[in-house]
Figure (cartoon, one colour):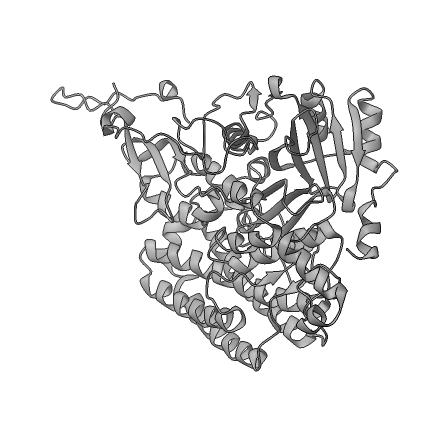
Length: 408
Length: 186
């Protein structure tokens, strides 16, 4: 919070001797405000329209994810992760399952990994579409919002086809996925990507060289590389500052090292750079999906390690090992070996890391999720001070705060 | 559990990693334990040396950890370990493409640790969250308030002895003016 005494008031006495000293006024924005994505409160201190101080207050959507998880069985946590970043739930599912797999020291089969890449990138696109659409709508480009939400619907229908749900997917398992690709999924996917590309090129024409849009976002919220690193930025906002850090490239997980894609970077980290970086990431994600669909190997979608998933019914009824495994999985749950791991994956907003501690029993000792937009919201005062009230909308929109992941 | 998994369980590197060796050389008395379970290089250090180790990790060209990735604590009450709390810091170096986990153990009756908010700006909010959830005192933090919970909340919810079904007293409705002042500051 900015020290109020440090703010100099300028005396401005008009000709009739009336004192119009520019004193500081405090205005609350939020918790429930149309331009606040989710519930967050900004106490802004204004000198006229100029922001001289800001104090974000978060926690309105705190549901105790970590506490609930530590009182659940490992497998019961997967549905909770849907509710973290609820715009891209599959990325959370994948991140958590990969973290538990790292704790076990196993890997999912290649077909499962390629499917995860496809579904993860679909989720990343929906995340970026939502963010960009919302920013555009808030600064007046309503068509762009409708087009992007239409495109998001194409993708959510794919998610529904795969998982049975649009948002609360609960799709990955430890060592694989809940189901294989449904029949005809890859051809549906190809159709939807063609439609998505059409939307992307139309919307690109609508905004990328639109003077009204550029005037609102260019040089707004610029951030230096040093500050971005110190604030722990990751994801599109760090890349917009010009640092090509992407977990998919820096610490390749899953099968990303076999896929060819580029990491777009900006230069000054203003809202326009963030817009361009997200637009390009959508195109790169489309490329990744196409490659993964081409390379989709045959094989199982679930590991054949014992005690990772329920045994087949014929084993449960047919032999004693199957029966014991089934009984132990139901009664005790998964029991990862004792140890601690940190598993970073690239979420929609940046590095989403799961820090898990197991004591070898069925109950997790510690389940910690590093929320990528926590750092971004923490930097809101640094990004907005010196700008005008109207700039909060594009700056905060491009931060893409997701309450579920911020407050957990 | 299959044989393959249980052999991997003991896969803890007996040799110190590169960063561990560096820290052992620079701070011979500070490093008490290390491991690299599943490839995550982990160093446990003494609390007294914590701030200087962090400064070294950030500034030394052999480390250059530009990002303080994550900061949290683990309550080891149910693991029957002493001391009870373990502070866990994750650092990421883009220059050397490396990660490091630094841990400091804190006793229940003395859970204080030096704040490192002056080294990385991200630390400010993470320390507030850790104070909120675990009641760890960060000495030197300028604004150690609750962040996810409200200020009247009693207890620290992520401690293992905080019951999951515990109910907090209902608060009186507050007048708007009590919370914050609108209008002109004088």
